[in-house]
Length: 243
Image 1: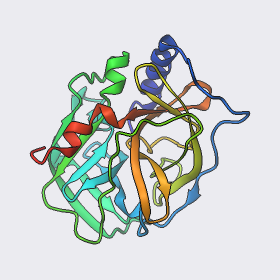
Image 2: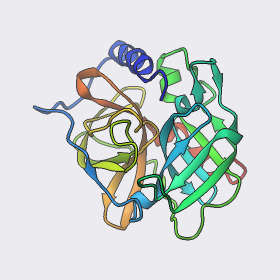
Image 3: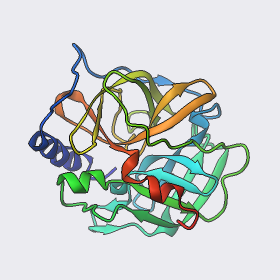
Image 4: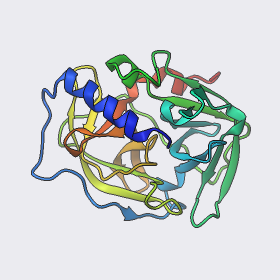
């Protein structure tokens, strides 16, 4: 996405200002992502968000007509404006330019405290967006459940999406860890993520059962750590039938 380095730098500074209390650092952070099948759960519920600015992010299906992603994915830094909802496309099962499902976005909601030019703690925690689709994604795509269970350091998680390095296929780190939780709730993890993976869900669980979203990846920065917004920041909006 446009301005990713700018966003990462500002978030990194803000996180350092908040302090790294309670973070469990390993000898080596980050892993090499692997190819995953975008038609097999849970990756079948993770898709690619295209927009009119010719850039993309990752999003996840959390209801038949709702997508979760990062708020900064909807901001065009060239024009300093948020993108129109009608310019957004969500693709499921995407690989090599082909896809299983294509749906348009009718409207979206972002965190009320989010400011694209402001990397305060409140703004980082509000870096989420819930997109309402113009039509449902279809019965072949099962929404990912969202849990408010607080993550803990060393908990095993997975993150997958569409990076700038591998734009035509989904890659994922299926064996990474939560490294800590900041005092304000921001999650730090060591998953192998790259530009374009912003908006990807942090998943816990394995196989086709007990997989839940525990957070939303928004940036990478300090010591190779990834930063994720906790579910508690957007849980009410995610469960609202009127959003």
